[in-house]
Image (cartoon, rainbow, N blue to C red; front, side, top):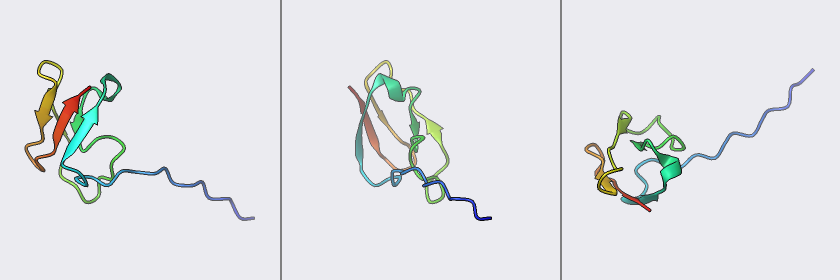
Length: 67
């Protein structure tokens, strides 16, 4: 008896863009973000964005702006 395979969730390629807009629902902010593929990226780092509305990843230089 074969079991039907579940479709894999769509993931975002990490480090594919240099700038990302995020919202309060994305907090706490990490790079790579939870929806990004992790196998070919850097270690997850949490970025403090709440006070200034802007953060930059020390690994890949991605910039995040809080809307």
